[in-house]
Image (tube, rainbow, N blue to C red; front, side, top):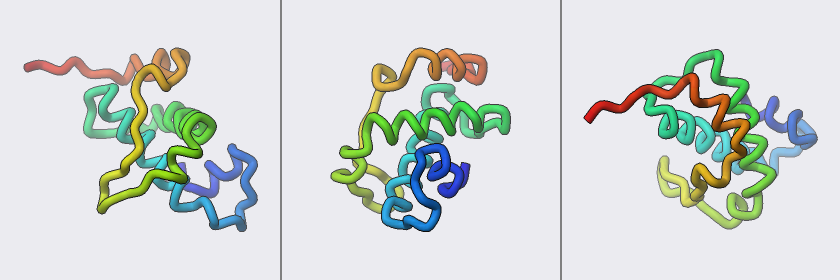
Length: 102
């Protein structure tokens, strides 16, 4: 989901660019959570709506953390775990999980 769509979901004015970097970071983190939780390198098109909702949850729960956190290169300083994500979203992610063989 592009940043303008996330702004619409969050009720942020499209011409307000003050939070664009934070929103972009949240989208990146939501995608990273999906890949890690599901043991995948790709994001299926069908999973985009779950990632969209995950981005909204991250904004709602962690906006202050993102405002205080920073990024070094491609790495963010934000942290969230499975306990921070609603069970309903994790349940929607389960069909996309791949078994990790060691």
